[in-house]
Amino acid sequence: MKAIHTCVSCLLLLASAAAVAEDNTMTIDRPDGPLIVNWGQPPPLPDQGRPDFDALDSNNDGRLTEGEAEPHALLHTDFKFADGNRNGSISKTELDRWNR
Image (cartoon, rainbow, N blue to C red):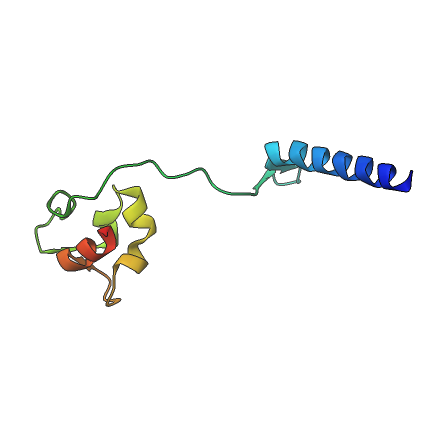
C-alpha cells in the first residue's frame, strides 16, 4: 500500500512539474513597475544557413567585426568562438573553420 502511495505521489509531482514547465515567465509587481522574470531554454535561433563572408564583410577589408556578423544570428552568438586567434575579428579562414 505504501508503494502505491509513493507512486501516486511521484506521478502528481511529475504532473505538477510539467505544468510549471509550460509557463516559464513570472511577473512581480514592484513600486517602480513590473519585473518580468523568464527562465528555461531560450527559443532556438533561426536557421540562416552558412554565413556568406563576402556578403557580411560590408567594408571589404577581409575581416568580419562583431557588428558585421550581427545579421547572421548564430555567427553573432558564436563570435568569440569563431574568432580563433581572439583578435576581435573573423578572417575567411576562421569562418571556414567555424563552418565545418
